Length: 155
Image (cartoon, rainbow, N blue to C red; front, side, top):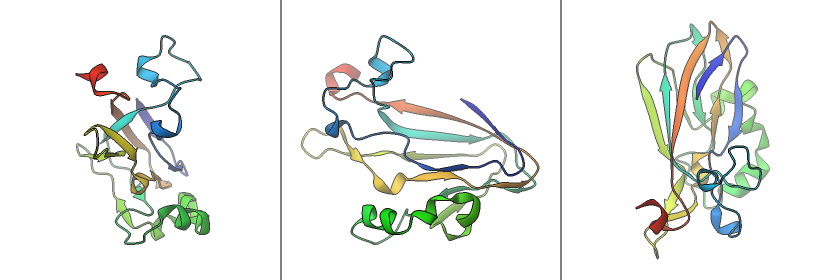
């Protein structure tokens, strides 16, 4: 997926995947027969984010709660909703990466399930978004490594 953000363009915080364990009867989208099936989950184990250029100013990728030592990120997300408004609060994010042409970030969206060794719960620290481009244009691309609910489907 290729992305373009012009001046003031941003993307508020989100997760790239969902907890399958909370929706056991809903299939992963990459196993669905219909491309636009609304009754499927994005089962994205990892995200790759590629920087195709460098905007003159802004456009950082931000992880507002990553690397935080708190015990309950859900509580922090409830109490600090403003952190998700990356248009206004980008500078308060715990981790920010300034776009540099030809570089890429990758991160895990899920923990590994200790019992099965496969896809576990969503990693709450993977909550991320894109800060405002304040000058110029940002071009980027992303791709995901999809993993299903059971190891047998993917091996």
